Length: 95
Length: 487
Image 1 (cartoon, one colour):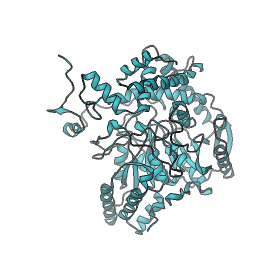
Image 2 (cartoon, chains in turn orange, cyan):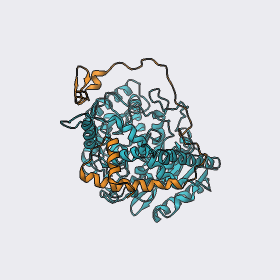
Image 3 (cartoon, rainbow over the protein chains, first blue to last red):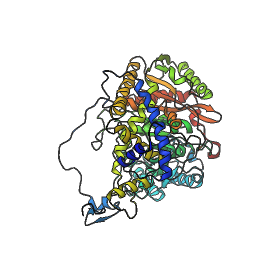
Image 4 (spheres, rainbow over the protein chains, first blue to last red):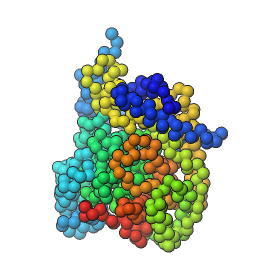
């Protein structure tokens, strides 16, 4: 295994993913296989190769900083699990 | 009019124009087909029957008033990755099981404005991550050619619906082969356009430097018809490129005389199943007989395309899918202890195994201490692969080969080993890494299952790909083959 349980646990926390015990064991195995597989990239000679930034070498288009969309808050919040007075509700963050 | 379902888009358009039948007739006929046949296929997540009949009636009224639009009354289905206002958009995930999009994707909007009739939303691998449609929260799609087999993925529902004659055309998305591989496995035509050609506004993001929207149809001419409406600049998509949109149908009749077709040696190596390779080689001989000139081209780094992809795509997915936090929309876990627990359990419950695996792979390759070894390295190798294509296209107009290494495999066959599954896309991923357009067209059978011929073009080379596929389809009839139980 190229990844151990502690590493996978750390990655799960960084990813904000809660895994069941069964999922966790499978993930250690499968994630290790994926990492082993992509490790073959290390064989490629990439000295002085500029990493690709865009498939067509375009630069990011910018626009004027003006309002283009109407405020559609109520409509958008119909999909929210929990809202009040136009605000999204989450568990208490600060005591 | 019991056989309206067998007609191509182009044929339906002619019949509507001639007044042989109405858009409502076509829509009713296909909705009835879906009702009967989708029980065995599971190609649809949502069927929008009422809405479809209303759009069809509106299209008929527009025609009667002399205002027929470009695709007036033509039926199609959308992959459930495209946001549709007022209609549930799931992306194949429990996370979005109840998500009703507040707006339409540009692709959806363009087709609706052109008079097309949406019949429903098709099943797909969860968040487009998969090559067999088995990662869908809504169950695997079955291949109309053999119900025990996969239709491919991730646009498997779109491909199965088109192959089974439940719809003449479908939209799809392609990040590593998700339009072309299912097209090959179901005997349909699948086009992935140049990166930036079609707007991605309202198309749920997977890997932003690779994703592109396209179509699955039963002929190249139908794909050309749809591309004319679908392609073009969109201010709302920051990756959309402002490049003139040609008349894709105009050049289809031009012969292949003198067309330079490149063959990549590695694409015919050991991994390719013998009879699949045989069908592809025969199709190359057809192109040659039509006047194309076959030459060998070298893509020295192409063998590294799959590992490159499995660094770049998960990295971008881990970032894109961070928006699903259980707060603003999507699945939320019950009774969270605190905010951290809310995030972790909402995501843990809302995402399936493959999506979680890719998010974690991406998180790992981007994490402190590993970024240079994986992500940066992959973007360098990606540059080498793209440069190889660029060199090759100095000498050839298209590159031809197999779309997939095998025909459709059995459901469950490759679910245990992610790497075996990933290698399905070995021939298609290169085009995504380099942002190139590519098409798959049916070119024969292997053990009674369809095989696809894959054509890749230089940037903005869609016209040549469509022409090449169309000319090939004038000499062959593989693309008209219909699975026996769906005639």
